[in-house]
Each structure stands twice: as structure tokens, then as C-alpha cells.
Length: 157
Picture 1 (cartoon, rainbow, N blue to C red):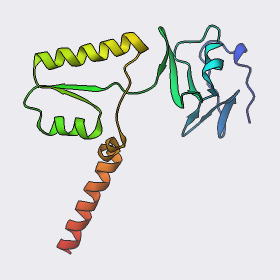
Picture 2 (picture 1 turned 90 degrees about the horizontal axis):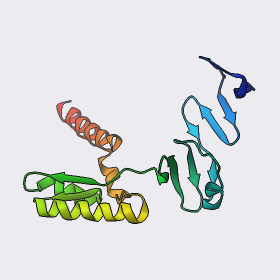
Picture 3 (picture 1 turned 90 degrees about the vertical axis):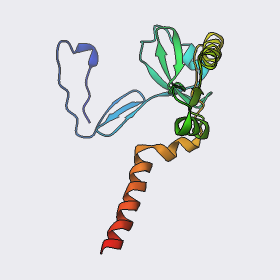
Picture 4 (picture 1 turned 180 degrees about the horizontal axis):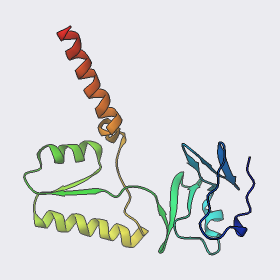
């Protein structure tokens, strides 16, 4: 394990470690970075928190990032789709609850006002995606293609 005094490092530096670097309760590995955990009280007690600092908040059970306007939940915002008549895009948004489809300018205005009011009230617009969104992840779609290709190979052979 390498012990490095980060206060004495200046300029461009390269640090090598065989498996991980640990600073407090943060661990950096070649495959992951673990972040510290705290509750909302501990988070709010922070003084001079650096923009970009990330924590796992045990009160809210969410990853939060410190932004120039304060703490924000690290989640994807909802999708607003426009154009056409909805079709499969609208169906997918409804199935996954990942966003809304605006079929006209009045609906778009209402959706934007809803999200704006949520932002004003809570300081963020949270993702509302449900577990169905996992059906459309790269891994899930790749597995489905793999199953189809495997079944075609069996037919051919």
C-alpha cells in the first residue's frame, strides 16, 4: 500500500499503486471508485464543500453531488420527446416512466411548466424511471440480439 502526502504534491504528478489508493473512506481501484457515506446532517455540516464532491446519503439512500447551487441528486433528468404522432417513442416513455411526449406546443408548454415548478420547489427535477427501463439497457438489448442470433445459428446448422 502506498502512502502519499497529497499536500506536498505540486505540478504534474504520476502516482502508481498496485491495487488501490485509499484516502479516508474513499477508495480508487482500477475498476471502480467508492465514495464516502454520510447522512443529511453530516452532509449539511460540511464547510467549503468542493463543487463536484460526491457522497452516498444514507438518509435519502441516493448518490448526491455538490453543485454551485448546492447538493443535487445524481440522476438523469426526465426525457421530453416532441414531433410526429408519438408512436413507439411515446409508448416507451410511458412504459418506462422515463419522460413525457408532447404532441403539440400546448402540451410541451405544460410539461415544461410542470418541470420548472418542480425545480423551483425542490431545486431539481428528478428522474421518475421505473425498473422497466432496464429492459432497454445496452446489456439487455445485446442479450436479446444474442438470443436471436443463437437461435438462427441453430436453425442453419
